[in-house]
Image 1 (cartoon, one colour):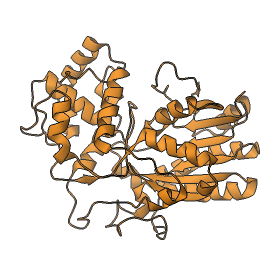
Image 2 (cartoon, helix red, strand yellow):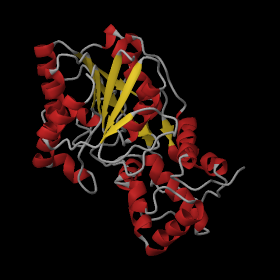
Image 3 (cartoon, rainbow, N blue to C red):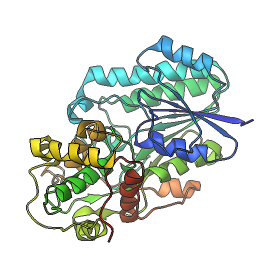
Image 4 (cartoon, rainbow, N blue to C red):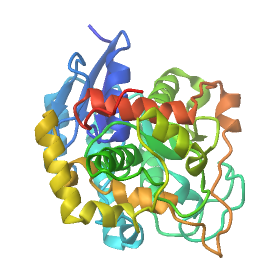
Length: 368
């Protein structure tokens, strides 16, 4: 029998699906995923899915009582507003996210079986959505004095850990790349749909950004690997870590190579935004044709994209005058603690684009 039982909340998202596949492949782990939608993972992935409502404390307590004792938790669930950004400043949504976490963590902690929690934050912890950041962003920087559900989560996990004795690790990933459909922030879904649709419509694969934006990417599989390391490493106990692939990516510079790898022609006039492009009637009709022709698992763009097209537009928009520099983080602390794995961000992007094809979430790209 497995001696570790991990519960992954937000199991259908970018982080959750990668974590399910990673932990299900490790010996000695029982995996349970909790999410409203069934995660889209490889067919041979062994896990249990529970569609509990995190807004309902009674439902969370009942779900915990009905499953085998949980020893590890990955909390990757989040409630976001349509269009994303407005929700980051909404006190009601911030409060809701705080309560969702407490609704799940409290009954888990009460079992006295919980040994470790992996919790997710991001660069909003450094206030990059409000002002220019002090670069590189380091975990030791003082906590920003701004409303954020990150702080509600962090304060609650620290209190429960002190009360019951489990350890925790807080990860602050940069831009995540994975395969989840319907996610709030999966740029791979947006870029993959854009690539497929430009081909279907006979358009050039024009770069949809406005300048040479510097990004730090995080492969969802790398993050899952880091969470497995944290679950067993004393060096990760009660620590906060930035995490990236280990390189930087300027997507506009990689665009010609990406186009060639997908059998597309770069150049031409870009759309005003990806959100505007996906909203066009001809685009929606083209996706319906592609979905029917290739038997895709998600028949509509809405089901594929979630809010990811808004996120991609934000990533590729120019730096504003008040924040002229990109938000770059230091990952030295994580490396010094013992986790040194890395990924090539261009290869990671290609991997997840083809992974979404394999999962029948995107149509096949032309072989080159």
